[in-house]
Image 1 (tube, helix red, strand yellow):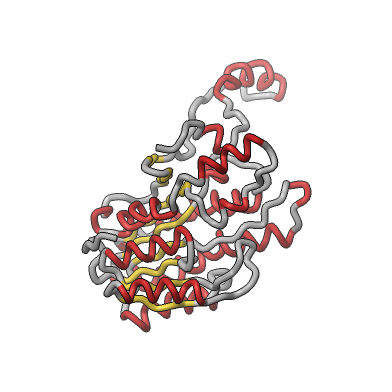
Image 2 (cartoon, one colour):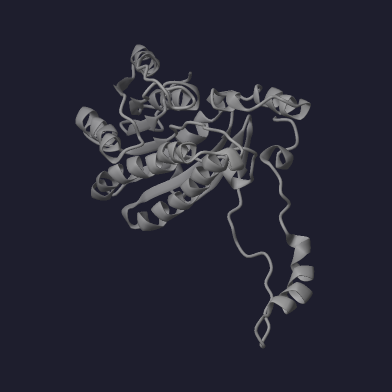
Length: 306
C-alpha cells in the first residue's frame, strides 16, 4: 500500500478492525500517517466468541510497515467499555481525532420470526455502539475543536432488504444520529458522515443463496473488495474533507455515490381541511404516481459493479 500523509499525526479509533472493511480502513489510515487503535473483540458474524488474534495481527502489520497501533478488545455495545476504547487512544497516543464506527453483527430473520433478543443484539452493537463510541469521543473533540466521525450505514436501511429489520433499523438510525452529530458539533469544527459500503465480507457472506437470484447477487458482491471502502473513509477523516459533513456516500467497487436524504417531493393543501374521504378522492390519485416501490438494494443497484 502506498504511503501518504493525509492523516499525519492524527489518532484514529477503528472499531471492528480485525477483519474485513475495518481492517482495510485501519491499514490505510496507518499508511496515511495516523496512529490507530485497532478495536476488535474477535467475535463471529453473529457476535459470539472472543479471539484477539485477528486484531493483534492488524496491529502487527501496521507496526511492521513502520506505523503505530495498539489493540483494544473492548466491546462497543456498552457505555463503560466504549469509553475504554476512546480512553485507550487518549492514554496511548495523547489525543483522539477520528472515530470510525464499523463494528457490527448480524442476526438475520424474517420479521415475523425475529426474537426480541435478535432485535436487541443487533441494535446494541450497531446503533448503541455507534452512539457510545461517538459520545465518548465528543468531549475530546469539543476541547480540541476538531474531529471527524465516519459511520457505516447500509442500503438495507437506506433502501431495503429482506430478513434484516433489526440491521436496517440500526443502520438507518445511524444516519439520523450522524446528521444530528454534525449539527450539534458544527460549532466545534467536528464533522460526521456515513458510508454505505458494498463489499464481500464475512457479514455479506451470510446472505442466503437459496434462489438463483440470490446466488447471482452474491456472485456480483464477491467481485467487490473490502479494500475499496478504505479510500473514502480515509478521505472523510482527513482535512481534505473539511467542508464535508452530514452526507451519505455509497461505495461500490470503483463507484462512489452521493445518496439522497428524505425531503418533501409533493404537497397538497385545502382551505377546508382534509377528511378521510377527500384524502382518498384527491390526495391518493395525485400522489400515488410518486410513491416509492417496495424495492430492495439489488433492484435499485441493478447493474454490474464497475
